Length: 376
Image (cartoon, rainbow, N blue to C red; front, side, top):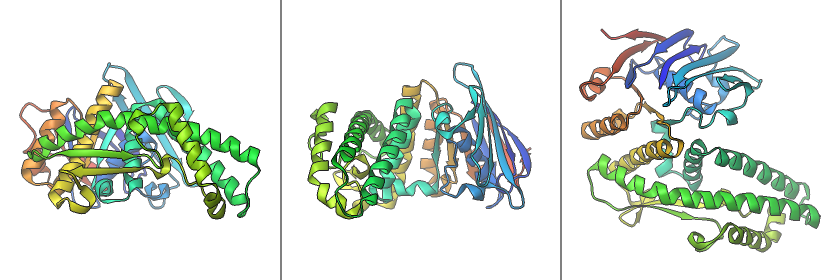
């Protein structure tokens, strides 16, 4: 649970501190008042970055040299936790937490799990396969330090192998060098594929249940994972997946040389969502897209809670303006029933406050020009 969020020169905030409710903190105010910046600060403390896809330089207040965030929290097992992040343009972030100093964003992931949902996340259901891979990988990374390390390692190996292909300018790289990078990438990739496969077997039914709870509709939800160039992945061991990767590398060798690019691996995997057998991207209605996106995020809440033994903090940025009142009420009820702390941004705080069940600890805070004022 987060107790306080302090912001310094972040976006339009000068120096401000928010005292948070145990259950629901509603941040209300006009557009551009600085509501989303609070959620960005929480995201920075959990992931080392904002959940909004913007350059980090955009986070620094105009005229300031740097911005900083400090979050004071408490884990589910009553363990105090504090994280401070300072960013100056062109320099490495300075990150300190209760567990150490001189840390990187990689060290933060999973320590204070969060689930964020904003209109920017529509790409998960509407967008390209890369958007869906990024979503699943991000959830897995918060759930497992091993996955975090694996994703960083895969990125490094892929970059190195691509660099070797590009440097050779259309000619075959030295066989010993290429074999070493290919073997390393195939081994790393195989574990990532296996972990995605196993994760989705658990995650898929959760999405199905959450969709029914949000929409009230008895529709069949399917998450279909199709690793690039690998058939029948459900029945393969890690060694067999490695062999399939190496075979794909051999098949694509000449084309890789011509293009200077690796053409096998999990960065090319397909992940599709289906409702009643139809591809969501092609056949789903606007209402189905919205319900599925919320269901994906609710499933993220439950799987992080169960795999980390820690309830994530939920960040809802202008989400309720996208949903009808019944769906809004269901979402709020489901989040609170799981005992999760929730932060909501809205231009109509009273309407959201009316959705909160009686007995809930709630704070309605007006944000204006980067300052906070609690409603009477």
